[in-house]
Length: 397
Image (cartoon, rainbow, N blue to C red; front, side, top):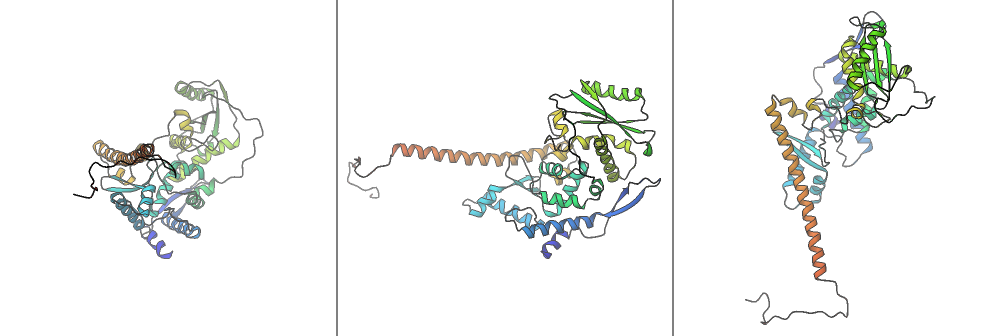
């Protein structure tokens, strides 16, 4: 295990670079502390490796070094070209396929949607990027986010990552109380919406002192606006802008309680910590997107999808293109070429699958015809055997 750990950590070790983080306090001056991202990554890799060794899961391919990953790609390619396949090669082809875009080769699952396998060295960075993108969301939200594009990020990996995230540990709160009143149910968007003001006077930003939070009750879609005061005119102006975009609700109510407000404040604290800033008014749009993007635990889909009918897209990062390919794109021509190569490889794989299914259907049909022409015989049945006109065996010249 130690040798494998050294292989995993070798690209991580080196001159340590630290990420500066704001420690949110009530004091006039922000207190700063640092965390060593590289050390965090090393500890994460060590823990997922220990977990894999302890459970000894066979053929899971969740934790692979770069060498193991490349070896698996070579085995799948060899299996694709083999005329007569071994049982191992059949297992490889049943589970994996190779996606090639330009010079980049990625190992993918056999599912209809392209989902890549990652070498262990890349897992931490992918989880961290997704975790920050959804506002330090919990286990289920993070699993849903990473599962859209990757095949070997497990719940155990996510739990380990979250347990080591400082921001998530600071966000921890007491267990929520049970429902003390009858839930309000609606079947249409804009049937009921709720609005609340969050007092930010202790941390004024460029003259803004309040945050207006507007949420549709059915979809849970959230809109955030910064306010300089609580005057009715200013609140009405922001509500009018929302109504003229989404329409006015049948019922508009307020006072959502502390849990709702605290959830929004926690999102802001996480965003400011990740971006090393106290200018919360600049982060309103980002936090709004972070709240609408992740899976909603009650509805089992994101508020964004509930509102617009599709999952939110973030440029090419939400596409099926590998991250290595995205980094090399310079213009639209490069993008079109990469998409064409991706679709060609995918369609070729699907064509092979269709051809295999066609062969199976053809063989089944031939067997049925043969059975119909040559019904089984039993002892005592009369049969007709043709006698050749010339007394000569087939092998005779």
